[in-house]
Length: 109
Image 1 (spheres, rainbow, N blue to C red):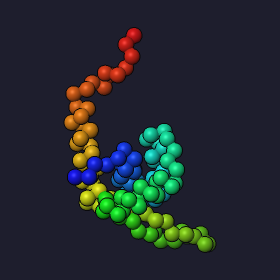
Image 2 (cartoon, one colour; image 1 turned 120 degrees about the horizontal axis):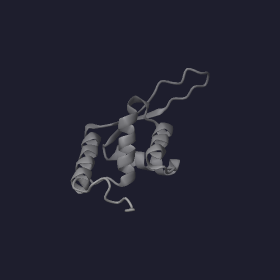
Image 3 (cartoon, rainbow, N blue to C red; image 1 turned 90 degrees about the vertical axis):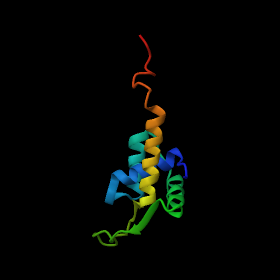
Image 4 (tube, rainbow, N blue to C red; image 1 turned 30 degrees about the horizontal axis):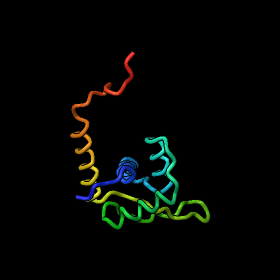
């Protein structure tokens, strides 16, 4: 089993949540929404390339945008292996954090 890095896990989760609208800009925006951090495009596309090479993500082109000179977008989707990797990551998190109360790290008054 390949263990995902935190960025890989969050990018896979973003692709899963974005469904048919998962392309570079929307993935980056969703990553920022859930982490509060900006992921530069170099890191994003490098990670996407590695995820595609590992068979966790598939990529394909959209139809051209309807406006004149409209470009195609590279869309990303999870493969069955990518869904399993994300499921495994979730299971590990649940096992690791399962007996820790939500309030365990709050400051006591």
